[in-house]
Length: 272
Image (cartoon, rainbow, N blue to C red):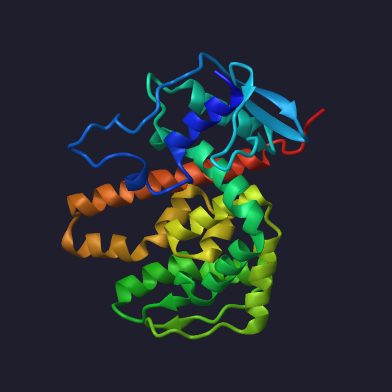
């Protein structure tokens, strides 16, 4: 099989990082109908073009946009190779989180980096942690316990003095605060931006995403900070099975995103 043929099969599996329901059929239908067969025996890593390439039987993997999949750290490249090595008879993108985020960085962040930064910076103008409840008292206390230290961290470390308001009515942030948040976002590499964007989407907060990126929060702390309201509702009404399953999936995705960010930074640019 030629390199081009391998790329075509790969594209069938992952598309252009579409949503899961666009990649495979819905439950109740044949779950393997749209998944390509495995066409390789081994996955490996080698230094290439200032980074690390993932190889399948010695041939370089390409992204859905047919760009060589070259990663900034050996640790991330090995994790991606392990995903490929771990596939069975079919290539299932649902089990390839690191590959998906790496593809996103190369195909969707690098070509439109300014637009991604703009989107995240705009998100900072309505950050979750800036809208604290003043009642009920129990919820207000929980929000303050999780969010107030992050407001302080954003000012002391990021230089962003964020406005905090009670209730849900939008209050625009000062331009200086937004500029500081944007600077923190712009400092991220393309691969970090891919992970950061995912973290912000999962948590509803640019501050929480940046705190996770910089190691200020663990995955568990980030998840709890992002879901104070859900935890409060479960405390009042008891746990709903469907909601618990949804949150468990989100927690797992956030953990995988945090691991991706850690792998990006682990021995990055250490090519001999």
